[in-house]
Length: 191
Image (tube, rainbow, N blue to C red; front, side, top):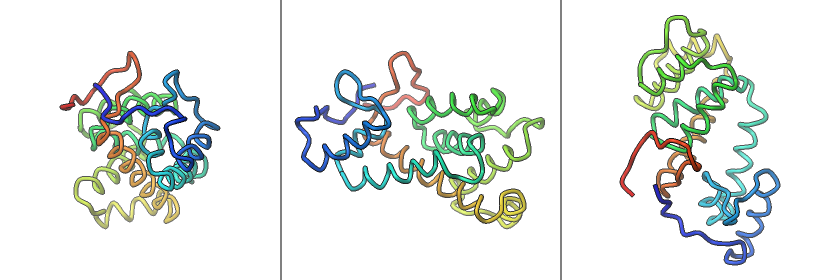
């Protein structure tokens, strides 16, 4: 898979783009071709988007009230819904590292119900994320279960996580950003 995004070195960027490049470089190392990978290179093309996206992404990484395991699970449900290769490959690994089982990850990928033995909060996360993606709504019983489990704050954190990663997935898909060397491409698409 080949990216649609024109590769630009640091010197080819505008001053505003260079500022965002330097900001991103504080938390991610660019490759030999001066590219970061993921959504970062497309975001740099719109410096204010890059600035705001990095701030929101940092919030998701550092400050949600539901914990990394649930956040990573919500991200892979989103990546699967959007058929986003980079999102799926990167975050399926992170979900596993945070304690999501291979069986749950496989169920998300296969768009199957989670296994009966899965933790209740994981089953709920999958149901909430799928409902919001697929029906654009959250039925009252699911809403009530989510509030009982996470409270309004936690539910809002899940909504902003899947909203942000929808934006990430759309960016990755639009610019056809490839997965890393040696990583699979689970969702083939036309280049």
